[in-house]
Length: 305
Image (tube, rainbow, N blue to C red):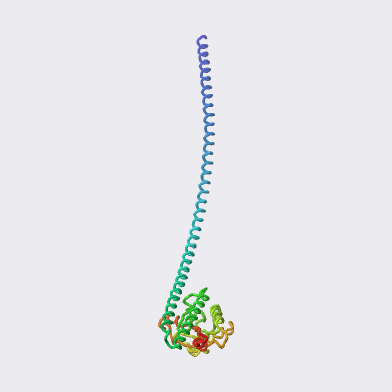
């Protein structure tokens, strides 16, 4: 009986010791688990912090990109404005250069005219009085025509292309050549609406110079025309000249006693009719401003010189 009791005692002691060891390990594992769980929570918080920072950086990057695009757009707009200003400056420079050239040409013309007048007067001092008066009258007429041409150029320069209106001084008269497309439709004798602005400006100059007579000449190209209203180019050119004269009288109150209408047909050409450009140049209306003969003779009178 002794021996079994001892064995039982040993087993109880062993079980007790094993139970203590297991409890200790369990406690240790529990502590490690709790620590791991705490560390995991901290890692989760850290990960969330990084996510928040990443989102903030992404928003900042997007804002920077938007700002960059806005800045580029502003720069492009400034470039366009700068280019426009450069073009305006270039146009102003071109206009300034033309004005300087015009002033320079007038200055040279004035100097040459003065030199010629001085030379002529010195040569004619001992000549016949009539020749002297004739030269003086011609010089005065040239001066009047030059002033008239400059005045016409000034009032007609705005809104009208140079190729559509040409002003020339030829001997004792001033020519104003107006292109066909400025005044009429093709094959028509009716004045176009846009022609009134040109004719009104010319009329103002004519009304300010009562000593002038005005001849209106119509010209055509060599393309034949034959309609119920027009027999040929002679008829077309004459009726176009009459249309201009009628507008001058009725719309702008020019004295009809000063007006002359003439048709030149397809003749007296400026260019060849074998090309389209040449035919365009030949289709024109010429307004001639010329002094009345009695006004010219008055210039020869010694008591009116």
